[in-house]
Amino acid sequence: MKKLIRIGTRDSQLAMWQATTVQKKLEKLGFPTQLVPVKSTGDLILDKPLYELGITGIFTKTLDVAMLSGTVDIAVHSMKDVPTLLPNGIVQTAVLERASFDDILVTNSIFEPSKNCTVATGSLRRKAQWLHRYPHHKVVDLRGNVNTRLQKLTDNQWDGAIFAKAGLERIDVLPTNHTLLDWMVPAPAQGAMVIVALEDDSYCKAATANLNDRNSEICTHIEREFLRTLEGGCTAPIGAIAEIEGSEVHFKGVLLSLDGKTKLETEKRIPLDRYSTFGKECANEILEQGGANLMKLIKDGR
Image (cartoon, rainbow, N blue to C red; front, side, top):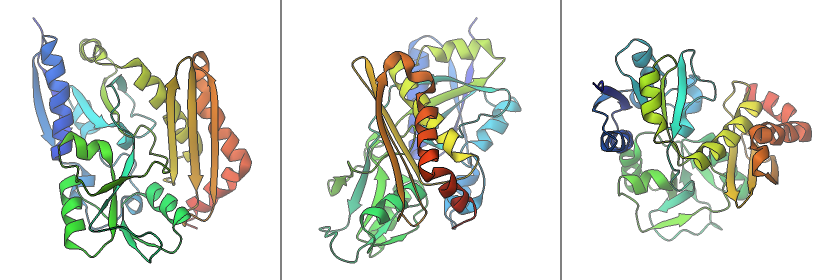
């Protein structure tokens, strides 16, 4: 007899969409499931930028605790929110086929970047890349779930706000007045959904492994290795994207100063069969270019 798989998820509309997608896929394979929504610390504290809260895995920690305490069996996350080091006893079991990894700018009116614009985002990475390109602009903090952030854009006199395209597409709220930011390097694993389970739960590990997309797993592995090697436990403006092109992997990674004035980047290709340490190699290249000193300044809040 197949046991019931309890799927832990945040209770936002986007998180519920992601968990329901996993639920449908598992049930199509014959596994009975139940959704167990919880509210994370990141969803409860909305009056501070994420990077000021100083909590690793702010959107995932509550679900980690629920899994370790036996309340849920698996959890579904936006992979970009998951710390590169999982808690002891919890393992990654599947990366679903990746959606769009692009960032977009949603605007209130015609966007004229040559003017002194105000743009909203809660992401250090987006803020630094934006200021690097548009140093004369003002960037303000934006928190909340997707619908809340869209409403805040409508309610304020901002010129625009930056979003992940995949999130808006998934819950069918992508506005027509948006611009693709094809120059902005996305967050590592942006657009990917990941499933985690308890390390000793062979049943759930085997069940969810059926949903793994190998190409998405490889690309997100490279990006997260790049992040882990640079990060050292510190939140920093880091972007990374890996794409499989035939028998090669193409990678681009960036590290910026908090004010966006300094930008270190790397872009490389290697044979696909050498992917396992590629992210770490690219990160070490950035560190040798001056990234080690830049990360020290970021940790010191400068």
